[in-house]
Length: 91
Image 1 (cartoon, rainbow, N blue to C red):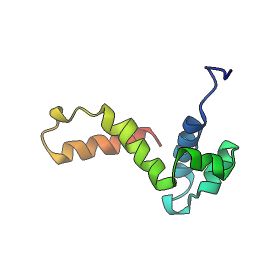
Image 2 (spheres, rainbow, N blue to C red):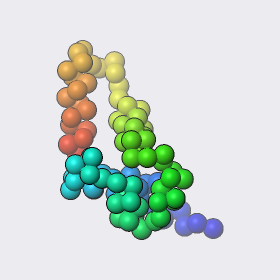
Image 3 (cartoon, rainbow, N blue to C red):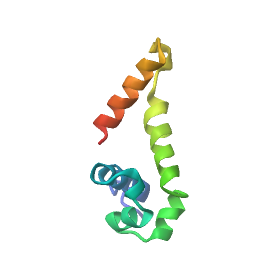
């Protein structure tokens, strides 16, 4: 039986990507780099995400948009400011 306090592989992948994006530009980050950082094989990565683009989309939708209260925004600039603040905090 898995230890409930053990971090899930998906969470490790997400954490690794966030760390790597602070060290490298997005175009330089590869699935191999993420997998090696997490200590998994590439096929294990692909069980969770199709590619790094799907990983970024997951982070954006699950961590940012789902927690966004759009009713409080008056302009698109307000949304953009919150988006920038989010990515700054998560770097």
